Length: 99
Image (cartoon, rainbow, N blue to C red; front, side):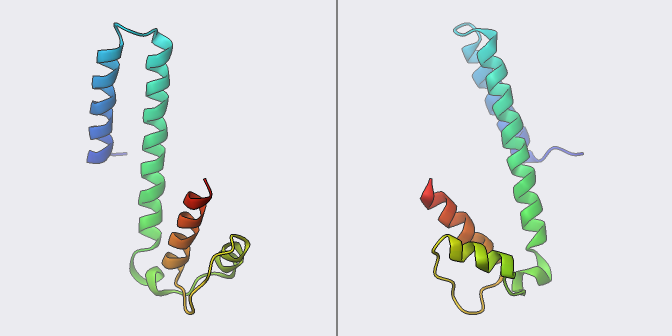
């Protein structure tokens, strides 16, 4: 598996942070930072996967019933003829607002 440029940039950024923090903190904090790198990489993969799903024909397909039901449970107004991609974006936005 090839590492994306974004991931390489983050690794470089975190490595620089660890280098600066090492003289000031215990090793446990360095481990915590490396844990964050792992989470960031997983998030990147998830977003890449989502973007792949919504490319091409999927972008114009109607939202699934499951998406519509979930949007209703979040009290989101659902425009007519909402696509899968639009529904996904509405869900993400509603979850962000509720945090």
